[in-house]
Image (spheres, rainbow, N blue to C red):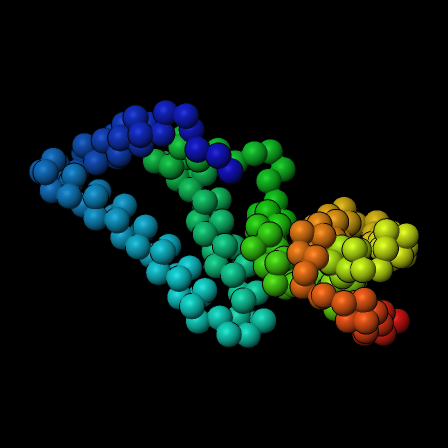
Length: 194
């Protein structure tokens, strides 16, 4: 979805065209318009904050997709509304379900809760992080071998996740300070994957 370039002017013109026949005092109309905009902003803020602050379980965190889907449906409906249809442009072949899932996944990925993140993918991502973190202790050849063995996927999202995990580990080489600690931790994650 995208908004028209001259949003403010078009919105004002559409609202004026809609309300002129009503013969409502312009001052009152301006107040009602401001209240509606403020109300909608407060609803969005409240819903998202409530979901974020109230989420204690994985299921509750994943519910963010439902909130985004609700707002997306409102936007889709707006594309056929007499006022908003000239303001909100829906791209051809727009897939609200896919877009919502992609946005929710981008918010949940860091916590391992994206729709595509299985426990196997998470364990491999953790192993990629260890390959980066422990590189200076286990050596480049062993680190590269771990990446080669466990960092592959046909899914580009998963490959990117593995690469980012490795990079994060590489940036934090002091997380595990000894070779023995690296060996123990790597063995633990290998066991989870097999």
